[in-house]
Amino acid sequence: MGIKIENIIKNFGSFVALDSINLDIKEGKLTALLGPSGSGKTTLLRIIAGLENADEGKISFFGKDITNAHAKDRGIGFVFQHYALFKHMNVFDNIAFGLRVRPKNVRPSKEEIKKKVNTLLSMIQLEFLANRMPHELSGGQKQRVALARALAIEPKVLLLDEPFGALDAKVRQDLRRWLRRLHDEISITSVFVTHDQEEALEVSDEIVIMQNGKIEQVGTPESVYENPANPFVYSFLGNVNLFSGRVGENGLVLGEGETLFVRPHEIEVFLQKEIDAIEARVIGHRILGARVRLDLMAQGREICAEIPKLQFDILRNSGKNSVFIRFLSLKSFQDNEWSEYVI
Ligand code: ADP
Ligand code: MG
Image 1 (cartoon, rainbow, N blue to C red):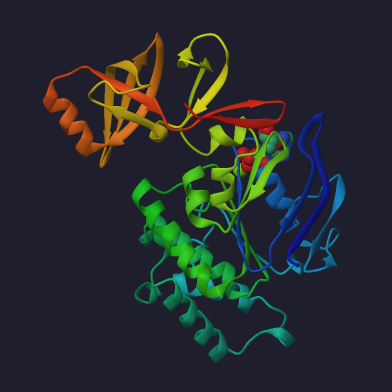
Image 2 (cartoon, helix red, strand yellow; image 1 turned 180 degrees about the horizontal axis):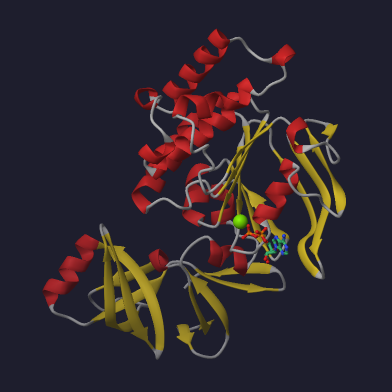
């Protein structure tokens, strides 16, 4: 049993920020709250932390009702997007802070604190920076220190609000892999807020997808990606082509019909005419390293396909500006259900 959230409602004036949230967060797992800006992720995290009160509902940690417990009595560690390190303290003192301010009867000895901080420094791989001041650290290093500081008090629950949001892309990728590995070692019940689907898919054991103060779906990264509950989840978790069309005896006809969904990598691209393939004109491309995004025009509709760079090189060398495409997966959503077309 981890964190149980029951019927949590939060209004700001007449605005409903959280609309009856029910959620079980698994013990020892890393759970991502994923959703667009304004969907209520931070509000939910702050209510879990006790930094904000819900209007209604109940929260339990490991079977114990903590709805009315003060934040400092909940046993949580918190990491924010903007490194909240103490500017006037070096790295060592920042990490030691939470232990040093404990009441005397539960405060570890100086030696114990030193040992603990050194262990944490080695865990975040920053032993050599113990004496640096925050302004002498890079953004990524600051966030690792913030994490060590949050872990120093041995929290039962670790809460992270877009912890890598202010960092540049490469550092962010490195840090999320690092956090994933670290989490595999320490297995602390953690909730990670992000609006970045790639980050959520890569880092978490479980993803909670939110929109407008509601939960749209909960599941493992693989299950929500493979079986999205609805078009919102489908579109939020990856690139998508949306167009109207009909699948009949003669294959797919674009234009009138229902809304069809296909991901760019689910479109097969041929240089030669193929059975059941539609001719498409290449109107643009973007090279994304090993993959290339092709902008295509087929039957008056713009469609985006993604192909390997090697195939793109062959296309480019051929001098052709049209290709033939076939849809590997074509979905429509009606009456709350997906149907998949085989063409
Ligand atoms: P997210 O973290 O998903 O971007 P938030 O939980 O921060 O979203 O906010 C959800 C909604 O609640 C937003 O529309 C935001 O403007 C509103 N909101 C958040 N905090 C307050 C507040 N203290 N007062 C009024 N509105 C707020
Ligand atoms: Mg937020």
